[in-house]
Length: 421
Image (cartoon, rainbow, N blue to C red; front, side, top):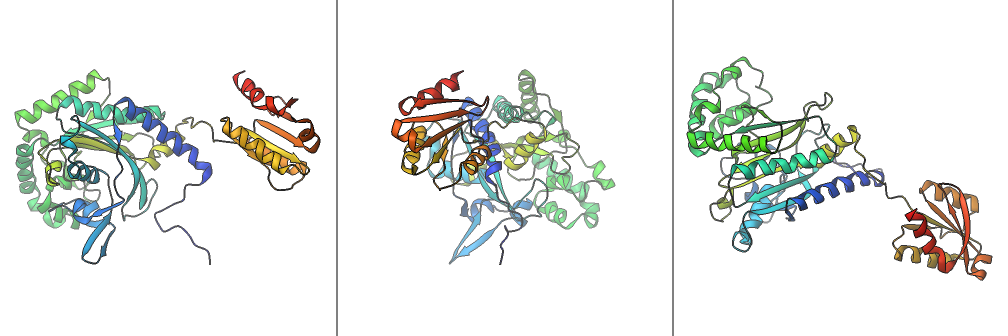
């Protein structure tokens, strides 16, 4: 019997890992520049961490992997923000660190949805959370962090979409206007939007099924219901983006998929024609009541998340240089009964910081040279019984096919000299 990965999951094979390592290195480098620190939370949490009262999101209502253990209910994490805020409150980080707290996470998430290009049931997500302070400039800086990562991955075909959901007062007025507007069309709404009508009518604007229906075009716009405070806040966000020279487009239909957002929401999307429905590279927004939900003080935060699979695929399509694939730099070939010396030599190379591999199974000279070639060795070190007696090795540089004989004591120095040339 042969086994396959479960539907919606996949293996990352060794030849693909250099791309992942490169993307992760870029992320860690740029988050360090912005003074964000990594946080790691469990892969599963109490279901109530994610399933909040009256949440209308598809993620909560349709896509969570939830399981029972006795009387307890747990859920594999479908997103990263909730776990970070839960940890922030549980460990009272708001009282032990300088605010705002800047965190990033990187790891697997799980959603039971239809697998398609760029969307899997187990996927890897990078995200940031900036918690404890609320200014338009922090909103713009957060967008700039994600934008810098995208640019560092050589993804140039992008658009920055931004909108505001306003404060509680503005959203309450807008929700009332939407319910009044959509009331005559309830029978024409899809099943999900009928639920959203009661829970959060803003989400109707984000519906992929009803999006193109004629009555959607006449729906009220949130900008018409913003109070002066919300309007002024959004104007300052745009001014800060202008100062950072980040191009953006205001998209009044942008509401985001999760219910906890307030004020600034944003998406950075690919403009490549082959991106299709999976064009979003990263997205997020500000939240005002999330920290207190888990038992902490009233604090605002802002964050975003990037799907790593989509980021890597786009970078690959746009020609990003992922760097070396980690091939062996030195390959030690043994001739005759010299396996112990071969092992000692390859280990000395590794201790000197030189990536090395050795043939530790008796094989012909031709077969060993083929292995060295397949492993991309830059230097081939040949060690036979005569060389062991004379305490020497033959070293071949594959780039120019030159070959020298050096004492065993000079081997590492010779390789490092060649590296510096």
